[in-house]
Length: 401
Image 1: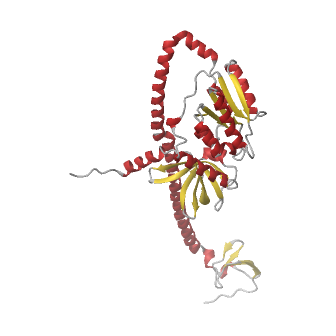
Image 2 (image 1 turned 30 degrees about the vertical axis):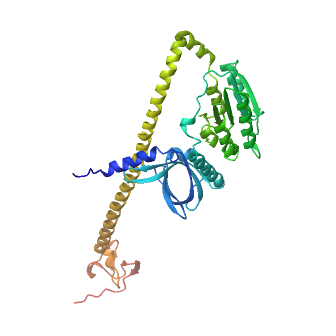
């Protein structure tokens, strides 16, 4: 019985699906030296990252180059690239799709971040199965953040607007500098022992150094050991910290964390009046089922993400553009060479081209002289040679046989 064979496209597609579904490759920082850097006319940037052990192809599309790159990328630079790894199916090669590039002034922090993230991932701190559900109707919400920062003021305002009856308990913690990570971990432990319904941890945005307290291992383990569900809202929407991965729910900002922790009272009242307690119970069951379907659909969509196909088409378009430019240049060069040959031939047929080695021709009042009968003594004539004119006057005319 013949064994089943697969096409090249099927093999590449299968490998692409494996890479697309990998947790770490979907959001990764890669450090290395820039080489083979090329700014394409389309606005995309193609380059390689290399170190002493190997290299990886990379591409940064035009849309990300405007927002994620604030310097001129050149060969030899040491950089840290943030993006995802995927396969370009047409060529069967994997490459790094870059969203952000930073010079390696803070590369050690990114390296420590990636090492700790990998370590905690392997230890199971990020597993979805251990995530605790966020209470729908909390009575007391604990907050671990700075006492004087903008984050706590935003949380207070949002909580008051959404449900003024929820009690907010603040543990004022250092969120930056020496001892901040230990202070945050201690705040989680204190609020967890107080029996609050939900804990919010976070701070406003900043650089990776500013957010580093939320990237410490002690904070991740404090979240893991807490019995209380924890929502992490650190930085801005584009920031990701170790605390975000370890928390039961990640919010893009502290304000969004408050919105996810505290429901809107009016919408809840409206739901209870119209559907009743029994309908509410059934709805929660259906919602859980739909959430499972949605998660499955999200995983499937991640594999079939049209952005990935669009990215491959963009690279293919760039390839076609390069081939067209080369073909046009080759054709232009051939026509240019032909014109030069014709010009040389035309110059060889020109009468003036023969005026070398002592030859010339004589004009009288602009008309070529072909016989001495056209010239008389004292006539003014012009002798044209290859490099100029000689103006002279006839002193004598002699006819020869």
